Image (cartoon, rainbow, N blue to C red):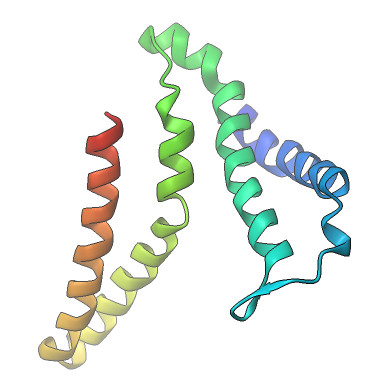
Amino acid sequence: SFGATGTLIYGVSWLVENLEQWMRLKKLRAQFLFWPVKKIIKDFFEIIAASSLNMITTAPALWWFFGRVSLASILSNALVGPIVPLVMIGGYLFAIVSFVSLQLSGIFVWSLDLLLKYIIGVANFLA
C-alpha cells in the first residue's frame, strides 16, 4: 500500500502533467455541453494513469502472494472508478433521508441499484 500511495501522489500527477504538455491541452478551448474538453481528457487519462501505475507498482506483490496478476483490472478501474464516489454519496444520502422519509429514500435506493448493477455488470464481463 505504501508503493501504491506514493504512485498516486507523485507518479500520477507527474505523468498527467507531462501528458498535458505532450498533447498540448492548454491551448484547447473546446467545450462539450458545459464541460471543457481539456478537463474531460485530463480526467480520463488521470483515471487510466492511476489504475495503470498502481497496477505496475503492486504487480510484484500480487504475483508473489497470489501467483497471478490481472490485466483486466486496468480497464475495470477505468470503467468503474468514476462511479464509486457516486455510490458512496448516494449511500450516505440514503442513510440520512431514510431517517426522515422512507418513501423519499426509495429514490436513492433506485439510483444506487442502477449504479451497483453497472459495477457488477462490469465485474462479471471482465471476470
